[in-house]
Length: 628
Image (cartoon, rainbow, N blue to C red; front, side, top):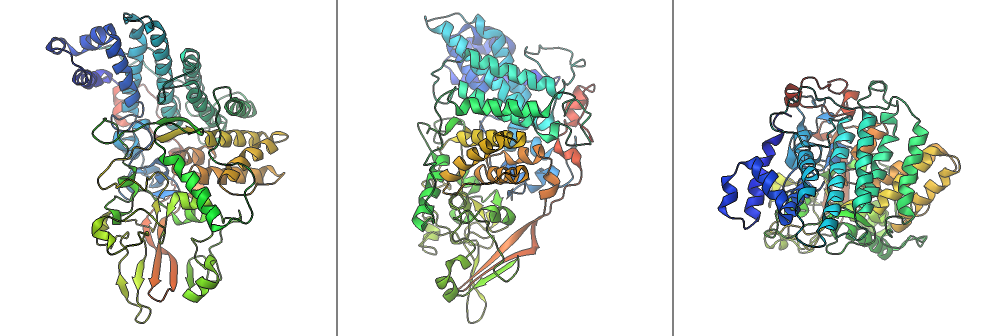
């Protein structure tokens, strides 16, 4: 951290390039430009705060968790085909010398120690100087107050992302100075860091206006962040549930009551549900779904859910806070979900493939569990054309719950119109992750366009037979165009599930309240209520619901750690091999010998990220996390 001011050069140049200032600014030292010029002009001060927003998630062009490599690809949900080795906790390789996913700002800037601390420094610099900006309009004092509230939220967001990955942090609410001695700084405890973040959230709430411009920090976003971190604080991971680190104050509480922390998490979520910070609701109906669901019903529920993630313009009633994007060429920050995640047969890059065990977790449309075994075992399914006509449920992708069709692209799934060089081969524009065979010779007749053997861009094809659909806009040709859909950082469904978990863990009279919240989420997606009086079963219901509802949104990595069950879910990612015959017969084979990614959980130390060797060398008095 001795070089914390190195970011100033980039900030100064970016601000200079974004304004119409004269050459006089270029003649001053960089630190003088930042300190004296930016905070002597309201427009530049606002631009500086804009840069704090831009770098809140650790990288100029990635202002959210919307990334090419998703955090949940480091769990049992998905496979990152481009850089699987970066998820070192699944390989036993993560160390202070090899941080992988935590090291590169392009793929995980929001948990990159250097990048986040650079913007914490930016934000501290802003808060230390913004009161000195001379007002140029009668509304400027109120504007300064509001901007300070935004800065407190930004800092709380950045610290919370580091805190949930590293534990206790180096806390500072003042900007570091050039030449400052960093040999005396230390990490604060896990509890002290939480209290620091909560204080920032409180300050932000007190300073922000009730009516904020869409996209800026608002009171509801502060409340949602508070709900998220208080649930983390109540978890087994930091309340003695991980024996190897239970006595370490950097990564665990050393006192207090876990029950009291669940009560605080419950109450934080309930404040939002009660409308304290605005009126939020799930998009779609939350009444009991029809039974049975028709195919048209399933499609309608699926479309409603998928549209949540491709919304543009004004936020819907479920969105608490989102990152907004514009088309390429009109701004520096971008969303390229279609090209990052889309099938390679569309000239896309095919990253973050859902794993077969994850696909099987999606229920049937009537709310019963999906069962692969139709008499041929857990790995093989076959069906003749006649059998499929008589019973379409022989196809494992038929009759599934609506969120399955909004989240996963599978062999035979409809998708957007093929590009011109593939449309003649696939005029129906359905995903081809399997291959086509002759029913007479048994020989392959055509490779699926969206496989690694496909003729469009085979090297970008799925390695295990699926693509993620959830964040992709069917109207965007990812080959040529950027996405403009928002990334939903906080949405009402997460708050309901946060509340449900806290209630279920508290048990007693709270348990039914938790189930009621789960059932709102399920009913919105066309699924029937969960009913139980058993706390363990209710806990299983909640964990399943978080897995499905929040698939790919970046919460599952935290959940597996919070619940201290990462070791129970890690397994190799293998390929589903699909044969489609010219007479309509089908075969689906989950081949455990076709390993797309070898994974193992080798040590409980990987529940926490290590501080890098470079950072430890700069400030050797820092204590690293247990096991490192």
